Image (cartoon, rainbow, N blue to C red; front, top):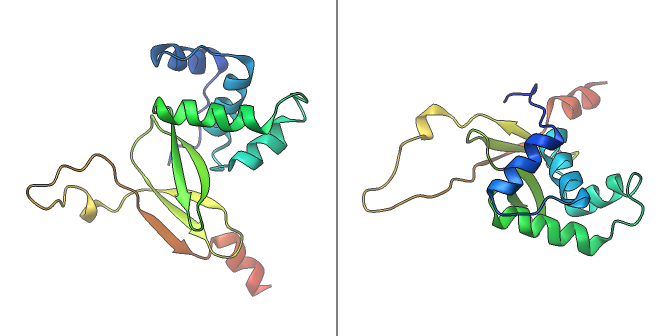
Length: 145
């Protein structure tokens, strides 16, 4: 996936305006964190990281902001086992995800070509969620040491 993408606050603000969302400092901070970190954070990870810069930021504000941004299709909710939700920027090329069973990190991966376009007649598909699970290269190298 494209790792050199960075979205500044002006671009993120414009994206929110086009979706009918008033860009506040907190909303911009949450959207920027998800869009530019590429770590597929959970709400708790977002709160923990942003509270250093925004001490008055509350858990409720983070959850409400994530809900608003997901409803506007600016963020995608990735529901990973046991109902734990993580977030990814929605307006980007379709891709799949790899989840490491050891460290629980989530990585972007391309969708295999042989899967794209294979649909059963009569069905209308509006989204595809494809997850690969295994051990990431970092965890494999730790095990070998």
